[in-house]
Image (cartoon, rainbow, N blue to C red; front, top):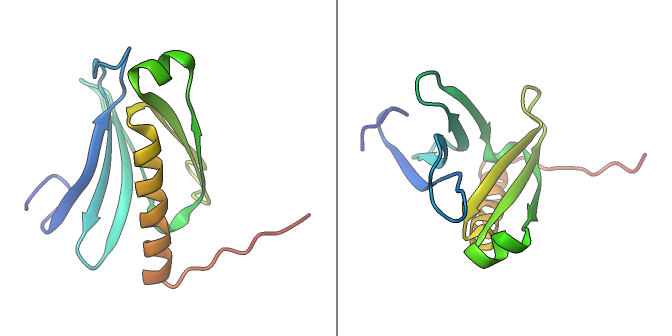
Length: 126
């Protein structure tokens, strides 16, 4: 599949920031895979001017989830991703649909990418 991410890329998951459960935003989230190379989490914000941020999955250190009462009612939540990326150490996926499933999917793929790229995280107690 040819896309703006290059030849041989596949969009594994995509969603938009939601308002009361409806995708009424110009903030888009994608999980993109290039066969045999990498998997990246990309946020694309804007209509006339776009700001695009991305993080390689093997760089993700921690994944958290927040869900408000309204989020529980409409099945949305905020996924907080912490990485060792210098430009964007914290990435928020705001008001995504099915947040528990998305968090589990990203977490599983992070572990797969760490094994594939032979990356090990060591936790330091300071």
